Image (cartoon, rainbow, N blue to C red):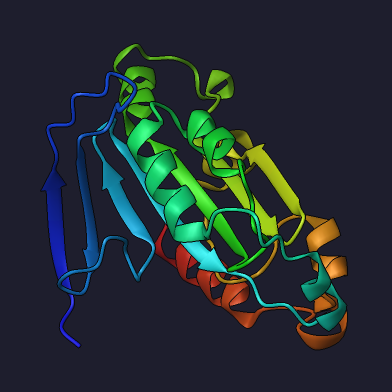
Length: 191
């Protein structure tokens, strides 16, 4: 089906809604991005990479009285003003379904750091990573670990957090994702 890049500008009167403009790729009529890529009004970029589950016993942890991921993403997209706030909103009412890794980039913070000439060692909260895997929601500021150290952050359907790697049985079924090597090699060659 046809994919389009759309921008919604809803003039909502609720003062809690901080992001009235949201842009994303989707099919006509979709209320969320099927590609899980958003640019939202507070100058945040939100991207997702799905996590596989190789441990079927984990399905018993699905919460029926919770919100599906697409609703929690829309709520976080509407109310968050920073990458850290986005992850704090996203973890609420986790259903344990559609397990993902989300990276949220705060571009207004990036430009503040650049324009104010803040030393890169002092950069914080620019890129937050959250992984949801059934009952686990691990979140971390990866600004220093990746952006500053490596000059990039890559996501490729592979868990960052060791607990999720172990619980999802990645060590048996998918111990190393070759895309990591490809991305690292391609990035190093271009520098």
